[in-house]
Every structure is written in structure tokens, then in C-alpha cells.
Picture 1 (spheres, rainbow, N blue to C red):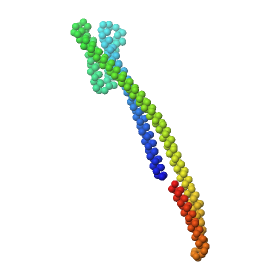
Picture 2: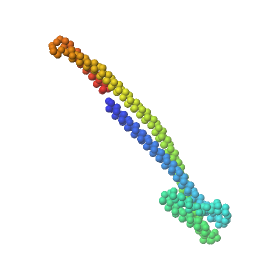
Picture 3: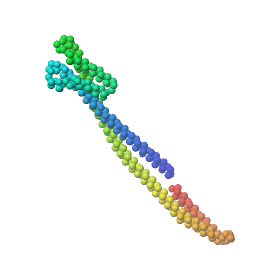
Picture 4: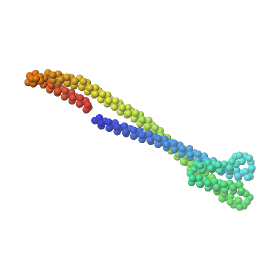
Length: 271
């Protein structure tokens, strides 16, 4: 019985530890997912900002070139002129944030932007040939701006999804933290109960040992002393002495009592 209880306690302890490890793992996993979701939100927001910078640079460059040629005002230089030379710097920063395939697209786009800027700078409104090419270049300029508008719109949708994923990860982490706290509390309580159970067992065993020690020091010793005394009363010189019969009967009775005491001790060790 004691062995079965010990095996049961060992099994329960193993199950408790396994559950605690699983909960800690799931909590850590959701924490990792939360960090990833937050980083995705930050990265997407950064991409949106960098795309908007290049898009605004291109718009300002187009405005600056088209207007400054006809009205060389310093106000246009300060307001829109910086877009002309900031495009390359902002484009480089944007390329560092995207994949290689996206970077190649940006390289192609940068070449198109440079081509349209060159055309705007060189274009002569009085030249018939330039006028004929204007429609094609305007379409190219619109296509470039449309590319950035589409990318920004897609990134904004992605940003919304990232925020939702981050919120979901936060809710899951909150759930698992609560589960971990409750589980730790339950495990602490169970551990206390198991320890208390073991302490009670030790107390019971100590009580039995004290009882056995008392029986051995008092009951067993008393019967042994009685047997020793009866042995001295036995008439060895005349075995047929009538008193020997009484001595032998008392020895038998004392032996039976001693047997009962031994059975009592055995019972206490088996319980």
C-alpha cells in the first residue's frame, strides 16, 4: 500500500511539473509572438514613412522643375527644390528596408524617376516634338506616383493586420500569464498538501516506532523476565517434581502472551 501511494505521488508530481513546463513554454512562445508582432508594426510603419518620403520627394521635384523653369522664385527652391536631390538619399534608405527582389524594383523605378526628371528639365514647351512626347511622359509620371500610392495603401492595410495580430498576441499573453499565476498557485498548494501528507506519514511512523519501542521495553521485557524466573523455579534435579507442572504451565501461558505481543508488533509494522 505504501509503495502504491509513493508511485501515485511520484506520478502526480511528474504531471504537475509537466503542466507547469508546458504553461511556461506557451507563455514564452506568446511573448515571442508579441515581440514579433510589435516589430512587424514598427517595420511596416517605417516602410510607409519611407515610401511617403520618396513619393513626396518625387512630387516636389516635378513641381519644382515644372514651375521653377517659368518662375525662378526662391520660394519654390526652398519649398519644392529639395525633393530633386533628396530622392536618391531617401531611395537608398528605403532599399535597406526591403527584400532583394523589392530592391531591384526600386532600382528600376529610380532609373525611371531620373529619366522623367531629365525630360522635365530639358523639355521645351515651344518644341513640337517635345509637345508630342509630353503625353507619354505624363503617363510615366502618373505611373510612378501610382506605384507609390499603391505600395502605401497595401502597407497601410498590412499595418492594420499587424496591429490586430499584435493585439491578439497581447491578449493571448495576458491569458497565459494569468494561467501561469493560477497554475503556480495551485501547484504551490498541491506541493504543500503533498509535503504535509509526507510529514503526517512520518509522524505516524514515528508514533508506531515509539509504540514498538515501548512494547519491546516493557511488555516483551516483562514476559522475558517471567520466563527467566520460571526457568529458575524449574526443578532440574527432579523433573518429576509436581511443582514443575505448574512451572511448565506458566511457561506456556507466558509464551502465548509473548506470541501475542510479537503479533502486535508485526501488526504495527505492517499498517
